[in-house]
Length: 327
Image (cartoon, rainbow, N blue to C red):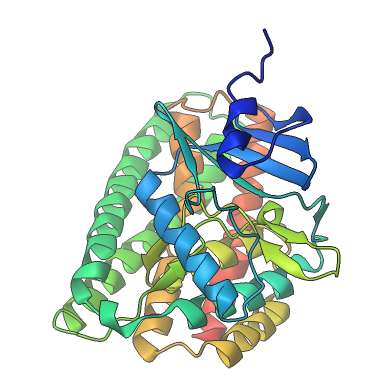
């Protein structure tokens, strides 16, 4: 019995067969060789209705001339995925070359702007689509802030502070102020736009990280992995993009140039720019660090934890300076 017995039959749904299969990333990503070329087969945890919506939308954008994504292959029944029991699978063409990290910021900014611009749909201009995001952010941000206060008492109560305690205690006033200010600004933004009827929604990639941008044979950058994609305000993608950018590179002057490049393709409205600045101002990654360390959710070593904490605080401070100068 082959360990790929659940994978081989899937290709019948595409009127082809797999000659060989190998694991690319345990436990859900495989590479298959077929007479029609090489494909990635992924077992996805994304809801089937999301895969159907995004898959059909990407094919529609491709028909309009956009080549910025690796499309999910369509089955012989014209579906962008295959369901087997509780598992959902989809195929995409195999592209072996990842975009070099130095090129990722510019190429990703361009592809996101194109995706947001081409997929915006004014039929979905509905404040109720944005309000759930704002409510969930306020709830989570408030919870993290209260949790940080509890962790502060733990750090203060230790007779012999750990290296993480020392870093945390030194930076807690700055982090608490940033978090509280973000919560207040988001509440004010929500109140100002309570009756706003023109929030733009676009397809958000949901994971605009370096591994999710590949080069095809012509050297063109293509987005992959739309498992977390959703119809939402484009500021959601931009927030993830800039948090990743400042973690990886973090040059403030380059960040401004990238923002200009994005807005040249997809100009943001004033309320969207304000929302982006508020999202970025909240120290979300550091709150996750505090949660992981003090609640022992990650099992980090002390050395790893303090190095991560110091690096994340440094990157956040750099991003905060950029936000103040840009917005």
